[in-house]
Amino acid sequence: MPDSGNPEAKASPNLPWTTRLLMSAVAFAVDVSCRPNMTFNRRLFNLVDLKCSASSQPKNGVKSSDIVIDSGRNLWVRLYTPTNVTETSTTSSLPVIVYFHGGGFVLLAANSKRFDDHCRRLAKEIPAVVISVNYRLAPENRYPSQYDDGIDVLKFIDSKISTVEDFPDCADLKRCFVAGDSAGGNLAHNVAVRANECSFSKLKLIGVIAIQPFFGGEERTQSEEDLNDITPLVSLKLTDWMWKAFLPEGSDRDHPAANTFGKNAIDISGVDIPATMVIVGGFDPLKVWQKRHYEGLKRHGKEAYLIVYPNVVHGFYFFPELHQGSLFIDNVRNFVQDQSAKS
Ligand SMILES: *[C@@H]1O[C@H](CO)[C@@H](O)[C@H](O)[C@H]1NC(C)=O
Figure (cartoon, rainbow, N blue to C red):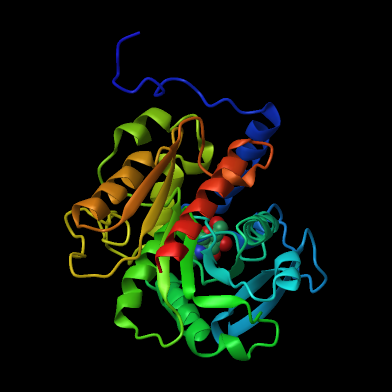
């Protein structure tokens, strides 16, 4: 075999067949819901996107409740509080993780079953108070609606959340992280950049956790070419559609929201960006964009950490049967602890 310089390029990820089947089914549902005329068939996709409600009774050691921020645009958050920690150690405080779910800016929600499980797990195992954001979706609401919603959630947390009955006293707003997977990782970064324009009185952002963040550009990278066929969830066909649905009409994928360090990028030299952790999977076609994002942060003198899981596909944390899930939790916990210790 000729040396392509990328030994894993032609290999395929080691996944249980059940996981493969599930991924293909979800990819199929997404594919048929993304219509050629750039509308999204929500009614159809909702059939596979199972939802669940908040639970005031602890479930797996975490209770949850929903807080409406602006009913006019259906902006709300789901708050996850680990009960075992908050009841036993009254003196210790918990970091706060503001979480943005993935889904190409187009699909899924804070109450999607898989995100509910994911956020509950983070709350329990980090441990942290997790605030999962239900932001507006494209194509009905394009850029910058999602970033606006993210900023408005941070403002709400800063000024009003302590008056919410369910919000625990142990939550330390001075140790606040923005996190997200895929499109949510893009949101975490861009919201952290925009947060520079706000002056918060209680909230302090001390970290960005970008899990397989959705970045892109006009160029076709090597990993997008090599991995296009084996990762249906992030095929070029789908990601092209998502960018087109999200970005302002008439703009291309070199828009600064997608290509953070490309030719149209905003200069972040003078922008205060909290320490950033970028998590990358070896079988993720987006990995070249993600590494470029990390390198761009470093080049501009920002504190950034790159974590690569070689045998991992896009969205691996959704499949609890994959053992990388626990490594992922350990890495996030270490990052949260390190940044908390410095703050
Ligand atoms: C897009 O296509 C769908 C299904 O073919 C149709 O129901 C809908 O009205 C179309 N919308 C627009 C804006 O063209």
